[in-house]
Picture 1 (cartoon, helix red, strand yellow):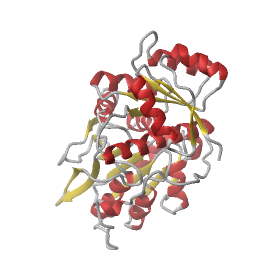
Picture 2 (cartoon, helix red, strand yellow):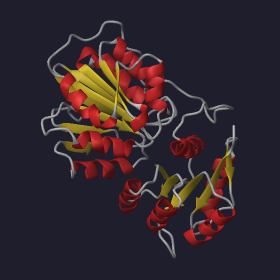
Picture 3 (cartoon, rainbow, N blue to C red):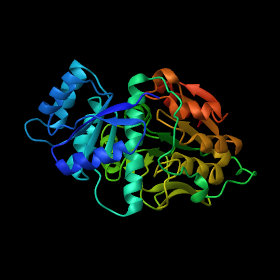
Picture 4 (cartoon, rainbow, N blue to C red):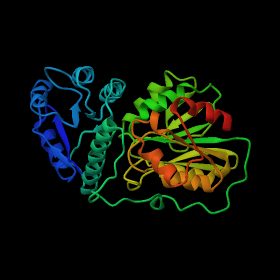
Length: 354
């Protein structure tokens, strides 16, 4: 497997060194000589073209957004935005996704051993996902995993074989990763104000999901908010799982609500699509519709199969409209997808089913 060449662009020497150490620990990644600002980065790129760039948002001489626009207009290269956890930083990083950035990661910082290991998993996976987004074609991942890959069993037991009695009220659960912010915008913007209730897991760092939900809420006819523990899942509203917390669909009588909880990474993610989908299989059964969108890896594939087995109708985004076809492809291969639909037709299909 050819190594992924990564150029780190950040004005902090500490961050550059930390990012280099993290990325170099993965046998599939090769770190180029880092750059302290976009001007130095441009010189590096003349000598060698990277496969992926990790780019700081705020830098002297030229900010990350301006440099991103130049890259995308002159020589498009997959870019992963590396941002601090601030309100302004979150807004700017989300804006970068509109300008062509593939992923957002939170800047690594000192913490516990578990925190550092999880940061390593997330950063290396983000870079790998970005490299696949450029190539479009998913190739098998080989070599050693950087960390054990846990299933949804660590959060919630598998649902029983007996699915819940079907009702007239449907609930929609959605999972997405790389390229998902734009896919979700297309999907949610197409829905009417009285759309069926929706719960979403989009792989995104802590702090960014709130800004992402607020941005969508301002442009969609439905209400969009970052999910909080015990929020009611109701018609005309979409709840987005908060970054770094698992989100489960629960039911009490006729009321659906969400539970927000901690726990280890599941399928290398927190929040995990597998956790949400399993909870939908268990507590909604035939009353659920599952949608899996663009993204690297296989998070959600097992959970979608469990939903289908519980009587839910399941939809996978098609390859042509995906930034990365990994997650939908895995769901299809495991027999979890009832139908495969282009992105611009998913909203229409969901409304028909509901």
